[in-house]
Length: 97
Image 1 (cartoon, rainbow, N blue to C red):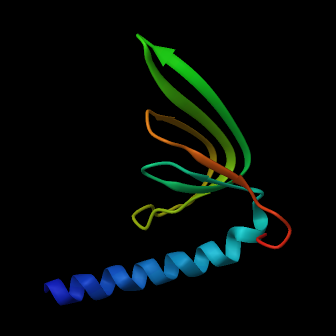
Image 2: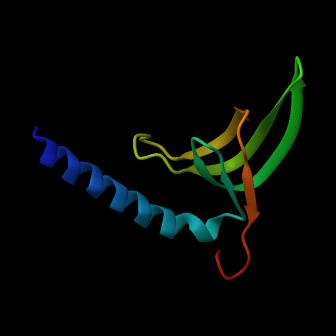
């Protein structure tokens, strides 16, 4: 497989992922973005934790969809995310959903 073939394959997968995202977006009420992933979810709980003076965030998502082109199944029932980085949570309005 050439570099060009690989690039074309990844471009096709990204396009399929975008189309899936567009189709499932109305099913969810929140967008959650971390440094590593992008989620759509209907339930999100954010907890600030501390360990030895370092602050981190624990997210618990239920009924979620994850933007990841390498996952065969993007719908997940429960997700727990732990991160030391920024977290963005947005409630979708009627227009977006």
